[in-house]
Image (cartoon, rainbow, N blue to C red; front, side, top):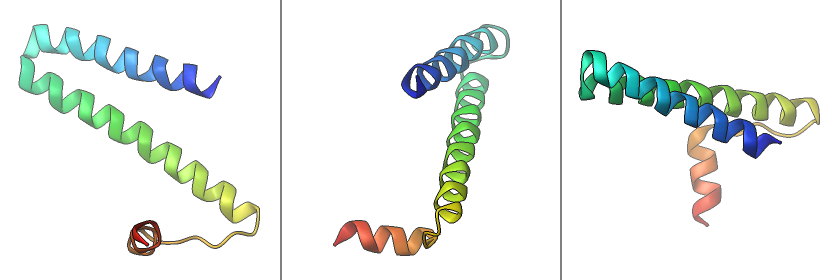
Length: 71
């Protein structure tokens, strides 16, 4: 279900972005699609962090996560 929801959000962003591209141009479309994807991704990451905090996990910042995944 989560995968379907994510695909729908991406599909809608691209579809609406196509309409914006027709009206305002390709550059405006790219900016809008990037903004929507970033906003959705940010909301997903914040929800994931809240879930970890509720379970008693340790929240790591971006630098710590990068160092952890590189080793």
